[in-house]
Image (tube, rainbow, N blue to C red; front, side):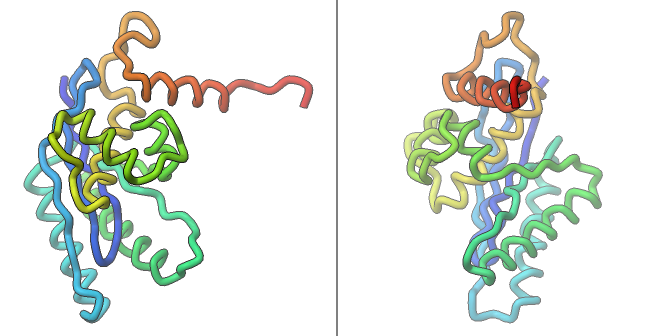
Length: 192
């Protein structure tokens, strides 16, 4: 069974949207990638409407089984956080209206899933996304690559693909590193 995941890297000026199919061997395949844009000098309500319509059109066109959205995290730039949060809300609404399950993933979760290192930079994430999807070059801008990374992360995290017969069999090095990191977080600590 193949799982189709639509990933969204929310942003008010640039919103990355990536769609991947992940099969039972956990291999991701690029379906589509887009960057929705709105002009910074346009009225906020018009910018939000433009992004909302773009997200809805892509969701309706690609009919994902699940959506993955980057979790908004605190930054020093309140304006950026507000725009990101507003666009996240639009994506959540689009999913809810269509009964599509949604998961929110932090940037470090996505980096760990795709590269095996939770503090990877955007260049490393983009390079690994291109490698995993068999692309000749990294999707640009970075928002597009990040959206694809979100979709891949979600598919792998959800275990939506068939589990290998032997634990760890069929996993990429990044997936093994992430699995091991998750185990260490979940393991009870004695003596504390």
